[in-house]
Image (cartoon, rainbow, N blue to C red):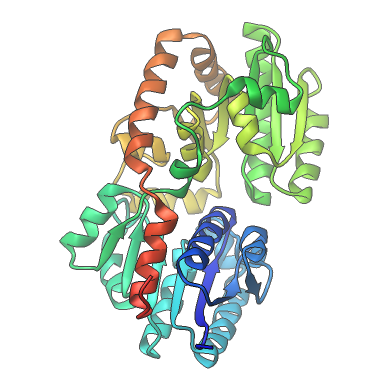
Length: 383
């Protein structure tokens, strides 16, 4: 029997765990004998990854927040590097988490290990000079968005636009009625989904704000069913505390995960900036995007930004499409007004759905299989 193909992977948060699991499944389909090890979450472990530490130890957002855990993160990266060089994988795939993965990839590439980075950093949006470091760190870049690939080609970095696995997985026409039936909702309920994030800091800052906005919206427009999917047990506990303090006037349904069904069943979505905004777009749900972070982190990021948007739907459309409310602009009053339009303006809703379908078609490219083909090629294996 031939030696198994050894693939090392590292994902640092839930969105990377989704991408990693899909890639692993495609690799197993295209190659009969493959072994996976590294760091990943529940989905990647279910697909066959032996994870060396819990992925949650890497999940941190914001510059000031990272600084507080910098020593621990450096220790984790050094230990992973030493293990990986000893294990000698045929290819290493770093999934998102660029501040952690790119430095690791540079060291592994210097040690002779083939490196792939899956999900481009927002180098086209801020700190464009990072492309030089990326070119030194990775043998190949896999991008989710078409304009990202164009940027790397201009800078002579090997790249493949693979599309987005969510665009492959989600139907072009989501079944709202079926989602409501699964969640025990009636057809005539007016439903608002709140997604305040998956990290503790996000939920702590955004859940009270979102509940205040929903309360104002209900006062102004009538009864609502407010649905909140909790990303974990810890996040559910945070949300329950916020509900007791800020959501007593609301009819609230709290769910253990099930974010896709919750957004599909909703008439509108209020959510934190992040990958969930792309999923809401693919589900054709009018949304309002809000975010608050440490003021120092926000000031640093804003000072280096070269794009005016943070929400992926707006970046894809290259214009102000969905409302983005950041920092001081994220107030209950402003969010409630945005949501009132998303719920009641039928022309706005129709135009939103049409544009979302157009962008969905652009991103549905068979991402898992395309990414697996590149990984096998760089590992020197025919798929």
